[in-house]
Image (cartoon, rainbow, N blue to C red; front, side):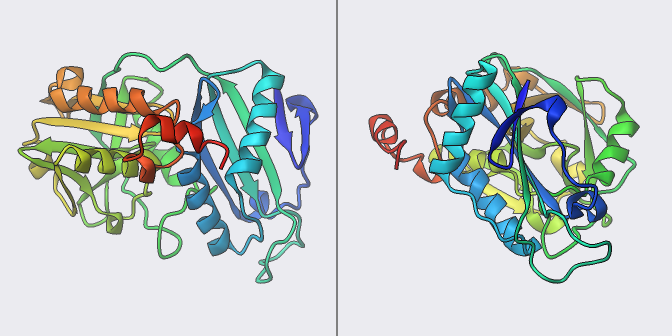
Length: 298
């Protein structure tokens, strides 16, 4: 397998960075994970927008743009003979002296990993369980998709490696937050509920996309501080992330839910399948399909 490392395509066994990289020493780094569908990087603009914002917060002097990033992705896909793939775009601060640095980082290390994924398929259910491990508060004003992943690792150890389970965090104040690697949604009446960013969650890209889809379907999207007791009254529940897409829940804390038979989960999944091979940003949901294709090189 080949990876991209600082303007070069190299074998993964040959990839090296300095032990003085502050991404390694102090966790000064960010990443985005997303899927390639038949060669198209779904919602790439949204991922890069979030990444670029995080780089400004960490004072890493680099910005990503669609054209150049997609050019690199296509080279990497061709080299690895992939058309459907998992992508991790990773950027760390770069080499510095030992000690906390206040000056900006001007030479970050950029790595892009890929691995094969099957084409998007049928809905796959999971069971959700409430974690004992609480969601930690963000290191700054908001949660970044950063290298600081110990809270998630501890939670994953709590539930084990079963692919059929997702653990759901509570905030320190006892409100529903998010999954270990996902955002949480439930539908009741004409409302789609999801925990607010102020609970300390990551503002997931698929989360934002689903919220836009819900509005297109005239659902009222409600973000707030909710308890487990409020959520288990739901008609349907699901979690989202950019690799697993939309994952219906068949149960939560032993309360039975419709899972993949849910009407709205199926509807969102159909919408996802419709857009995943052409959409660059959730903001283009109202653009007709032929216009999206014409704008792919812009």
